[in-house]
Every structure is written in C-alpha cells, then in structure tokens.
Picture 1 (tube, each protein chain N blue to C red):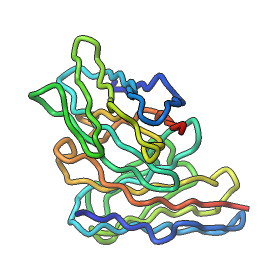
Picture 2 (cartoon, one colour):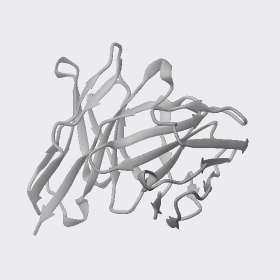
Picture 3 (tube, each protein chain N blue to C red):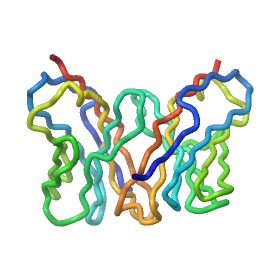
Picture 4 (cartoon, each protein chain N blue to C red):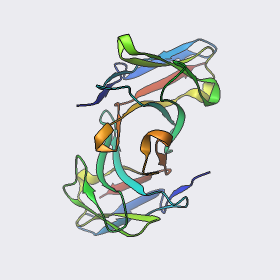
Length: 114
Length: 113
C-alpha cells in the first residue's frame, strides 16, 4: 500500500515562527498536494506539485510556500505563523493520471498557533 | 467549472439503520467520482470510485454508491450502519484539465446506539 507520512500529528507554534510541515510518500507518485481543513469549509487546496522543483498555487496560497527538492518529499512552509493558520493540514499524493487511482492522504498534522 | 455539492452537513442515524449520503456534481463530460471517509483525527481514506461501466459501485466497509447521470448524483449508501461508521464523508469529482480532485464540503455522520 502507498504510504503518505506526515512527520508530526500535533504541533504547537508561536505567532511569527517559521513552521515546516513535512510530507513523504513511498510509491514514486508524481503529484503531491497540501490542503488545510477547517470546520464547515471542507478541504481547501494550498499548493500542489506535479514534479520535482515544480509548484503551483492552489486556492489559498497566501501566507504559505512549498518546497519539493525530491520526488518523495513535499514540504509546506509557514513563513511567519499566525493564529488564523491554526488548522488541520493534510498532505496527499497521486500518480500523474489522477482519475485512475484518486489521492492517497496522510494522517494529517493539527497545527495550533498561539 | 466542475463542482461538488453535499447538501447535508450533518446526519444522525441509529445503529443498524440504513444510510444514504447525497452528492451532486457538475461536470461536462463523463465524470470520475470518488467517496472518501475521514475518521476523527485521521486523514482521508478512499471508500470507492466510479469511472465507467456498471453504475452501482461497491466499496470497502460495506458501502456502495450509485451513479445517476440524469440526476448528476453519486449517492453513497450502506444497508446497516455500525457505530464505527461515525466519521466525515467527502464526495469528489475529477477536475479534468485541472488535474485535481474537486471535493465537496463533507457530511458529518453521527451514529446513535
């Protein structure tokens, strides 16, 4: 089975800190995605990547950046964390031909910014 | 543009009762459709998917979904709900040229003993 691993289940950070959320997948998937999930708002796409060193903005990229130096790893960076970035963050990956297999999700990182 | 609507935000059913979660989509061509489940504090797990062929699709955990083109719907069903089915359920449609899945806002299922 494909595994998508998010390095932390829970994080507590202070306002203004630089925060790194790491995601690693082990099945050579080309596509990787970062979402945030908030009650009543569903999943909102922050950034995605179709290949190493490639990135595309999603629906809510403000306040975030990403890094994909290796195919298996996709990092989400909060340059200066703010309380409104307190949320559940979900990483997902897929083969290039998404329709065939859908996405595989990690278990999520619940980030609290105080 | 492609979109997905899950009209029910929250549903409560009794254990052993049948379940139907609604999903309506907007897509010009033949859609690729998915249902995911998210247990509390977890990521999303694929329940089932529809690409073509038989419009009744079987998934894991005893779930099934029926594709109805005339109604633009892909409703999820289970004949007898178990307490462990309490979770949030997301419907999704393939976004075509965008190369992404478009998710609904989810339906939170509570199961009463």
